[in-house]
Image (tube, rainbow, N blue to C red):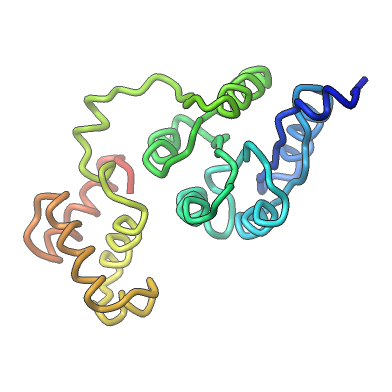
Length: 213
């Protein structure tokens, strides 16, 4: 039974997952636990973003592949919002989503294969200001230059791989031509390449080798 005191102390939660069965199951888990107060749910990244702007919450839990925006871009948008919830990504660790989540600024990661209790304890820790991630091989993380790219630089590299010109990059990303040149310069430095062609080759080489791209 929830008392007034327990409700006031409960960690406020917003859930985002495209799978209705997963969303329903997670909702039930948090509604049964008096340490939490579930405020809202969403099946899309856009809906999640709209919701957290209307309803302040301490912790948000998202599917890394949340449509249409995806987890990385959603985290980029949330970083620009004051009072945004700290984000726990609930995803597939085998696909290295935990590395992407860490690089994009999430506060925690829980694999879908983990027990429900792990998700609950992670959310409590994140609400308390901690970062919670599974074991990471830091040497491997540092050895992959793509892990050093900002979300904007990653977007630009993906756009480059589609053959977009600087003018098309400016239009697609909503930034000025000078900003495009600035990001490209940083991108080349981080990847240790000297040209657009080399950056594209690096991108496709990394995809084929199973790295983050």
